[in-house]
Image (tube, rainbow, N blue to C red; front, side, top):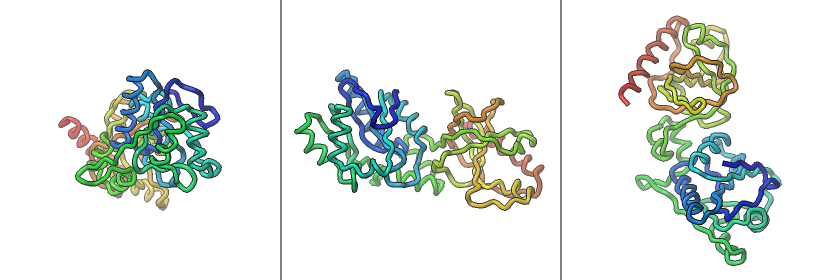
Length: 308
């Protein structure tokens, strides 16, 4: 997939079928739109294209970072993804200007696919009806996709965000069509876990929504290979108490011990897929007690994977 950052770098591609939206989470509803664009271009010999925005236009906490979103869009077979910087200047562009200057003049869209609730342009005035009215002038087709529901409730990024924060990962997985995950880079920690005999990778999640504190059995994608492991999310109460450091809310950490992988991962991207919660995070009176519990967590995690 070719990724284009910025309107000014957009080039012409043959017969573009454009999926327009934020696509935060690339959930079940988003996938229907994106897969439809891919299928259509196979019929027409055109180019499947996503036009998306970063940061989130609604200034909401993002389910996924831009890198995470792009990876999932690529997996669906999209040819080109245009990422538009949602700056103050861009936010001032009217919906009519966006259609004319970007979708028509820059991209030459043949078809445009849009979700029912998506809005664009200044004051969010652009919608399916506006695209439809302009289609007769500029000779393109537009298709609106309805809201997908499960058990009578609409699927939305907001709903998934709320489920993850509450720890209802099974329900979130149904809406996403895949396990809840975090994509982050490995950063340097204090190497205390390594001294205890359990080397861990400390993860910077780049402001993605993460599950509640606790210990989880996880799968880890590293360099296109899938590993198993155990992950701790939380404030490391045993460590902070023994180092005379008072944990604050912003000090929440993600650490993952990866089975059968022992290499320098600093700076690498890891995707952590949450399989099952093992227990709540607890404080132990000594690091030795913590080490004993980690060993139990590893045994339980492996038992969970053996049943899959």
